[in-house]
Amino acid sequence: MTLQLSKITKIFLIKLCYSLLFLQTNYAQTTAIHEDNTQSRLQQGFPVVTNNIRTAFFSKNNEILNFPILKLYESETILLEFDDLYSDQIRDYQFTLIHCDQNWEKSDLSQYDYLEGYPNEYITDYEYSVNTLVPYIHYRAEIPGQNLKITKSGNYLLRVFLNDPEEIILQLRLYVIDEKVEISGKIINPVNSAKRFTHQEISFTIKLNQIQIYNPNEEVKLSIIQNYLIEEAITDLRPKSYRSELLDYTFNSKSIFEAANEFRFIDLRTLKQRTINTKELDQLSDHYKLTEWPIELRGRTPYQYSQDINGQFVIESYDVNRVSTEADYALVDLQIPIPKLLNEDLFLSGGFTNTMLRNETRFKYDFNDNSYKLSLFLKQGYYNYQLYTMDTSGTKSKKIDGSFYETENEYFIFVYYRSINDRYDQLIGIKQLSSRNSSLQ
Image (tube, rainbow, N blue to C red; front, side):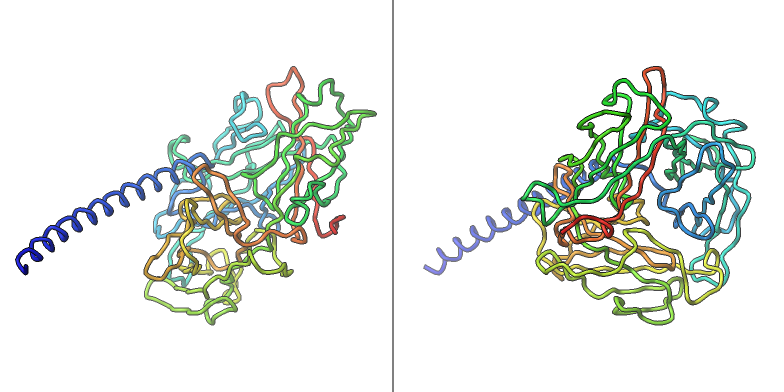
């Protein structure tokens, strides 16, 4: 009897080992497929920066511009800034400008159609970091440049490269406007009762002052953007009517956005003491390390107003005088203690990620702690962010952290015009609206 049980036990153990091996292999294959699928969904986005290039932005009068806008025919400039980390050698970076259509696809124009002067300019303004644990070189360049003039309105990509213009190390968006329309609008509750308490609708009109159109559905294109989130722009809008030079987009059921919740924040303005969200602060030999308190999701709690900067970020430090070269970098650890989501990935996004869901800002699940974890390497400053989920089809949502019609959001309406004889989209109007000054109730 004992011998028989022993044989049964051996057979059972052998089968168990094979089963575990199969499950492990199957899990690894499933995980690999999931990783590849996630990568494919992310790679459809917008190339941003290489690993050593950090904290890239446009600024004007020491203020970061999340929507950098230049006026056509005016001599104003904006400043491009970025850091090259762990570099002790000055690099001959250059920049150029690429004209795009409304959807950020390269237009049919050649550079000589929209630029006067040599299209590539060297970046010659740079400084080494001072007294920082993380060494870097800070680069600056005036845009469009001393020897460059923009002659067409529209969307532009600024590309920074080292030797080959096709090998881009940094790419940012900017706008050039030739204002020809007046836009009036407000934020209202959606008529759809199912979305009344979780969404916001943009109702607006466009007055055509300086252009004559014959087919508004074909000649006028729109992009409505919430809180600088270009990737989530609503573009497929058609006017309800066109009369007396007025395009009517009021109570348009397509211009509806998920209201989400107020932005969360990471406060790195000092590395000498812990701030409100910081649990631990350590100075290591080559960088600072912060561990934030675990994040508690707000999806099942009532709406509560908290002041934010609508997804933007500010490079600022209480510890030094010149943040451009004296502010340090820190590794920030985030943790969300929730069960693993089924067939969904969890992301963080904000102005500092170029408002995109990127692989570097995707949380990884730690089964030992039953938590989602993410580490970010950031320069001293104040950062707003939101949490997103994305399913296997690429559908994104912010509902995991709550969505309330009361949430304060900013909206931007971009108006483009292309006549039947044009080869490019002109940017002819921009309007900023705030739900703070709205008809929500």
